[in-house]
Length: 353
Image (cartoon, rainbow, N blue to C red):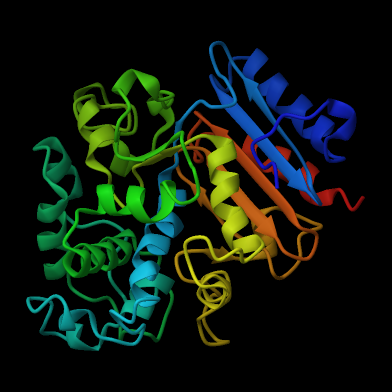
């Protein structure tokens, strides 16, 4: 598919030039320090980089785009019949019991209907102490449930964490090496790592942490040992937010689900991941994926799937038009509305050519 290839501008997808101007203006003004844009449509692709020292292969902290990547690794075990989606988490996590926890299923954890919180109450304390993922798992298992599992939608990074821990328990491998083995290597994502992998801290694009989310330090000088740019966080490999990738590599990942190529997952499993799993009365979600045309903007079909990241990232694919759009920036998502990532994405989505 040539998803990571650079083509001449004349061969690039229509709409790319408008998106290009938005990101050029954002970086030239200093609003955004670094950004990359990858657009693919009907066999034509191009990657562009913005900001001093930024290249097409620059690796950004993905934030929550990490979630579908880690869920894809988990689902390789589904393809091996190692679990069923409606298995209770307690089948694999015997301490996850009491107060209705036995009712929480893997499907609910993956679709944000588990009633688990986004972050554990002790999140900042754990990060300040450089806690391991195992410690986060222990705390997540003790968090009270907010409602009857499966009855409502509540975005939950901790649900993804516990599901990823199930992958660790079944495979006998930590999530960092398991994602590399089951996702990055088969898809030839050579500029990707769960945590830092084989890369160095300085290989990664820094985040503009002064605009970070509160749970990530929010620019607090005292949080520099655990914020998004800290060696601790970059190495941790949190399945809800510490994956590093280049824009072309994110496109390679989305391509597996767009074209159902069967490289890492059975086509039926990949299609299930990108399809709504929630009842009609609950916000639609796939398995790890957001499934909504609002991801990209006007012009995206109801089949659109992908994710955003609070670190300033956005990625989606639309099977109806065979389009992939990846916008990675260093400017946190909460910094400004509308964010340059969304404005650029909308230009790609609006192109019906």
